[in-house]
Image (cartoon, rainbow, N blue to C red):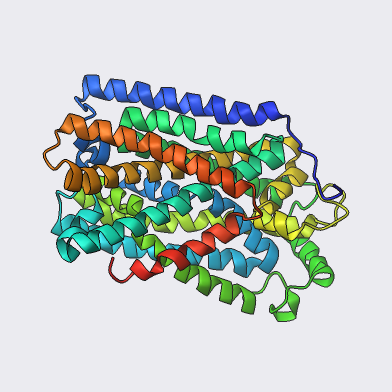
Amino acid sequence: MANIVASPLPQGAGYGIIVGVGALFAFGMWAIAVLLAKFQNEVQGSEMFMTAKRSIGTGLVASAVVSGWTIAATLLTSTSWAYSYGVSGAYYYGAGACVQIFIFAVSAVELKRRAPGAHTFLEISRIRYGTAGHLIQIAYSTLFQIINCVNILVGGSSVFTALAGMNDLAAVWLLPVGVVIYTLTGGIKATILTDYVHTIIIYATILSGLFVVYARSSLIGSPDAMYKLLQSATQRSPVPGNADGDYLTMSSQSGVLLGVVFWCAVFGATVDVQLFQKAIAANPASTMPGYMIGGLSWFAIPFCLATTFGLAARALENNPAFPTYPRVMTELEVSQGLPFPYAAQALMGKGGSVFVLVMIFMACTSGFSADIVAVASVFTYDIYGTYINPSATGGTLVKMSHFAVVVWTICMAIIATGITRTTIGVNYLVTCMGVFTCSMVFPM
């Protein structure tokens, strides 16, 4: 019991953000869908629901790439790596996942060039590899989506539990509700529009936290103070494998090793159909610039956040203001990504906890919405429309996509419920997905 950290916020704050903000986005996207249908004739048929009639521009594609790649693990694991390995952990996390976005840019251009009318990337694999290869790739793609969606729900619920004392099962089941509502009403276009809003909020909050830590906080307040605190942390808890045990060196055996493992693991994302779904929804001229801008912009999120709050957690863990004082964080707390919320709480009090909850909510909902649209597309076109009812009408395909969204969300919440009963955290889920899916990298 001595290791339990009291929640800084009441449960109402957690429920208010999940239910209240979720309802706000759901209502907002529903209203936008109604207005677009009335004034732009954007009726939610199967093509509009899944591909937005291939009309998304560069800015929205870039924000969708950033938002889809910014899941809860991006915020939590990157700060945990900076806490554990120093600045090298932050760099290798961001760099290790940026390469794949640029590779996706090339793949997306080829997709638009060779199959401009495709509804999913897996439709092309059926032509290339036949029915057997198609079904195998569907299985691997589904496995990746399971791990990713469960990762989102487990990571989000752990933070809401730690900061607001919410029941973790309630958080797991409530987080996707608003997402499902606005996805059902607006399809992939509603998802991408929501991604744009989420991305703006995430960047604004990261910049606010950056200036608080390095310019205004009484606990740190300047880069010079951070440097001195990290030098003291090096004396207390040197990093094994780092030059002189320092947190501010790139000469880190552990950081390089972890970066290579992560770089290889994230290549498993080549089976992630939600990234290809954004390319399908994009205007052909917007595909390459959208992905390139998105990849460059995304790197700033884990690197900036980790070098701010990950290093702050290590610098302040012996300060009475730190939530776990006088002990250091346990391995379980680090694996759950709690250096980020603990550092924000120490630096900004209850406001910092709200700051973290809003960011985590945005990351969870945007990532989950992109995944469920992609899963619905695969089920509708690659399974139902190909093998069950090839002559299905557009109305039937829309109904099946809605069915897939609801059933998938329920199944992911059930699996996440089981995972929360174990000691498995977001760090494990992030690194294990490559082990399970990398065998499909070269065929894809």
